[in-house]
Amino acid sequence: MDNLGSILVSKLNPRVPRIWPIGDLKNENAICSTEFQIFKPKNEKLFGYLYFLFRSNDAVDALTMSASGTSGSHQRVRPEDILNIRTSLPSIERAEQFSLLVMPSIDKARSNLLQIQTLETLRDNLLPKLMSGEVRVAA
Image (cartoon, rainbow, N blue to C red; front, side):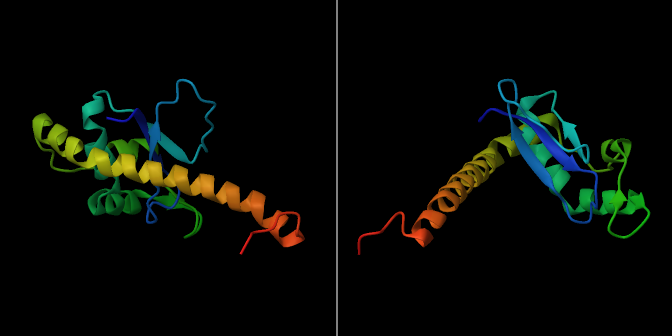
């Protein structure tokens, strides 16, 4: 298993789910908006199960129903509402098996995101130089 550690669940506008797997943050400077609730599974073997539970239609619907706010674009859920999502739970063994099956997909998505960020940085650095003629590409 990759060194995933926490799951971020957005408290803002839950009808648009923003659920992100976050790596082990022991050695990184990490800052997160207060609009996210951070969950760290007590059992790391349940990470994949919990990640997909938070992304499930049932969880999104439950959070959308419990959201409140001053306008349609600023709906928030309380942390306790996230913790009180009702769902039928499998045995721990089944949840661990599910996690084992989905972790390669979660790891691949994280890897792809890092590659996208690297390519965006490269594009942002090279494009102005190409446009100004400072750098040329051989045909």
